[in-house]
Image: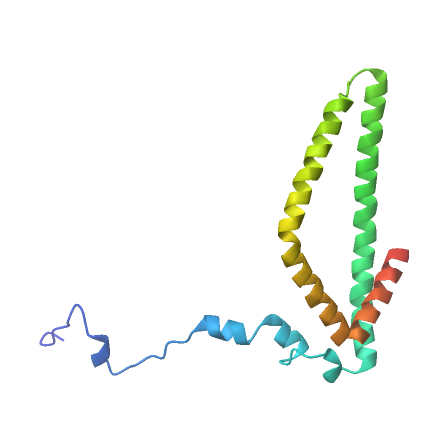
Length: 156
């Protein structure tokens, strides 16, 4: 190696090994996660799974969602109701004094602000609703299984 001199900045074109550059973003666009779960077609799931499988998948996922919704809903309702009850007891006992006129003006300001924001967000919400309803129409069996499971999850 004493007689060989290495070039500090070798030309990549003169190298014998050539590498192909892969565009990962293009691959990610073509192979999205739902393609692996539901297949490559964006059409209805009915083309890939049997009706019983679709109902089972929808029912199990719906039951899980309903059960979690019920548990989280109970906790949230208890927290809000308990906080309101404690605030009323503190108000009645004289520990806290609420300026109801200020509360009313702040609520009215918040209503106006929300109406302005809702009008700006309407196109995104409408497109989401349209996409969701289209998914439900294309996958009616899976969707009906989900709704049934969701109601059972709420009841349990």
